[in-house]
Image 1: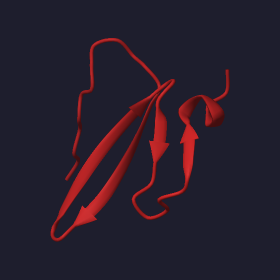
Image 2: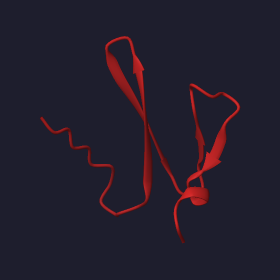
Image 3: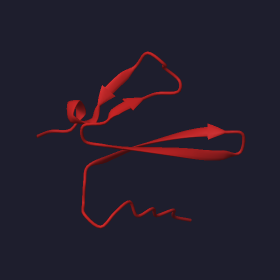
Image 4: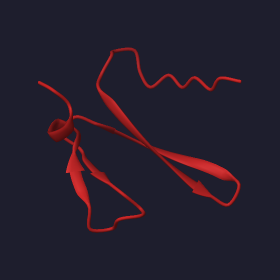
Length: 54
C-alpha cells in the first residue's frame, strides 16, 4: 500500500521527518530556509539549504 501526500501545487524542495508516537507516525515538513529539528537529538539543528545542492 502506498501513502501519497500532496504538499502544494508548486514544487518546492521539502524534507519530511516522521516520528512514531505510540501506534501512529506524526510528520513534520520543512522547506528551504527553515531549521530542521530532531526530536531524538534536541541540540541538532540544520537547514534544508545546508543539505540540498544549489
